[in-house]
Each structure stands twice: as structure tokens, then as C-alpha cells.
Length: 148
Image (cartoon, rainbow, N blue to C red):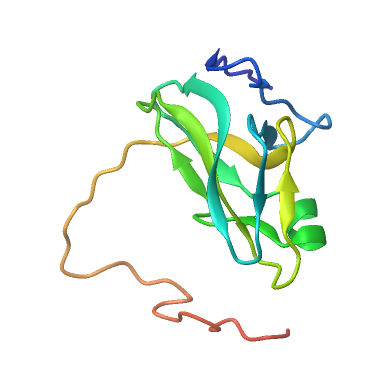
């Protein structure tokens, strides 16, 4: 497996370098660098205290943590959050508490989201009068049915 080196800068002492929880994981854990409480249905921009330099041709995708989602209703609002290779500002995560009754407290150092870094080729569009045919064609939402 090829390892991609990513430069990372801690912006404060509370920042924690992202890491994989298990061998074979696709996502690295992002951690909060500050504490805050999200009230029911509230959203907040949660800082990580980190800035990264993704290589050109790569992008970072910020995704929710499934445990926080199922146990506490915490999600990333703009899933996936996109980090372009030319962005050098602080990584921040837009979290929302979807629980209608319980507030949720995030402590500095808590794992709040996952970062997946993937190659992203540069694309260009070619205008055409007709697109090639496929088995699916124009079948959209629900076109494959519910069961086999």
C-alpha cells in the first residue's frame, strides 16, 4: 500500500494529529481542540486546531462518526465536508446535535469526525448532442426497486 505524506501544522497546544483507530481503517479521527455543548438541534463550527497541506490531486472528505450518530445524534451537517488541496486554513467541522431532547458536550480532545483523503483527478467536460446508452438509462430514484 502506498503511503501519502501530508504536511500538518498544529495551531494550538490542544491540537491532536489525526490517526487511524484500527489497521485497515479508511478514515482518520479528527478531534476537537475546544470544549462546547450542542443543545438539541443546535449546530456549531468545531475547531480541530490543525491545518494541512494536501498534495495536488488529492482532497480530504470530513465524515461523521457512526458511534456519535447512533448513540447521540451528532452528525456533520455538510457531509462530506470537502478540503481542497490548496486550502491552508484551520480544519473545522460543522457538527449538529439532531437529538430533540438531550444536549451533547464535546470536550477538547474528543473524536468528532473522520477524515478520508482520496485522489481526485482533474476533470473537463466535452459537450455532446447525445450521450452513450446504458442499461440503466435515465432511471433515477428507486429505479432498481426495493428487492430482487
